[in-house]
Length: 390
Image 1 (cartoon, rainbow, N blue to C red):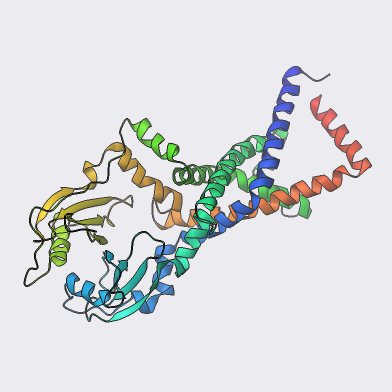
Image 2 (spheres, rainbow, N blue to C red; image 1 turned 180 degrees about the horizontal axis):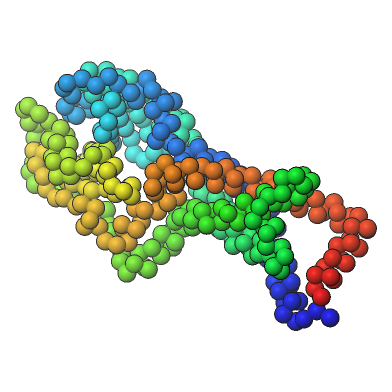
């Protein structure tokens, strides 16, 4: 007779098996799309200058034109749309990006050579390759509806990973060795099962990290949980006002002054984003990314008077509360950029493997379904279960 403990364990595993099956079937297509697009986005920063070399790469010269002049050049391309942002990259061979419009939807872009003032390219942000891939990854190109679907699928994938670990766990010591390696010389059905289960086990930690961090963008309560656990509150977006009346100044413009002052206040190497104030009362806001830091996505912020370019306020990364600092790490964990190329390569392989899970999982289910229709196979399966339960 089977022991109560063995029967209970078998029933629990059967329950997890059903959960794993139906969640996998429900989320399979979405997981496939999100995983494939995620694998592309891992190397977005490295691939973009290659895909758009004519727009992004320039020949460095001795002197650069003031940011204010570059804005004026870009403004001629879209004179009726307000300037939103100016991105000045740390690399000397990169063009300056000027964006127009509110929000990413409908946003216009102009790339300008910072040494000659030549417009290198322009167009809609939505139509850019990585913008489309990102929209597919986060929203399935369906806006808010897509965000709900990817959020639910991400939750399912988290549960799938947990249930997968439970199902992988061997029933006895003799089966342990089989769970750590793929038997390549076996039948296709066995290789497919090993691929799904064995590599799934090795990837489980990374899959959990990716799915958990993905939930931060899907659900506000998950994002808020970071601050709750750290004992802090989300920092409000500061709206700093000018100290002087807006006035046109001769010589070097206020945006060039703001850029120079930002680099002086935060001397580390990194990209600077200059946010153009939407009205005359607000100050110029600059954000600089520390690209020398061991852990990426560390930003420091400054505000400058829009009339004079004088510094009003500084907020280095170190002054952010604990919750905000942790929140900045979520993105590099999710994308695999936490420790540079080594973790990016891991993220790439794990994302590609995750894209195969719905396929290999479906083949396992389909094989069992066909087997269940065979009376001889059913009797054999029952006998094996009875032997295992003894």
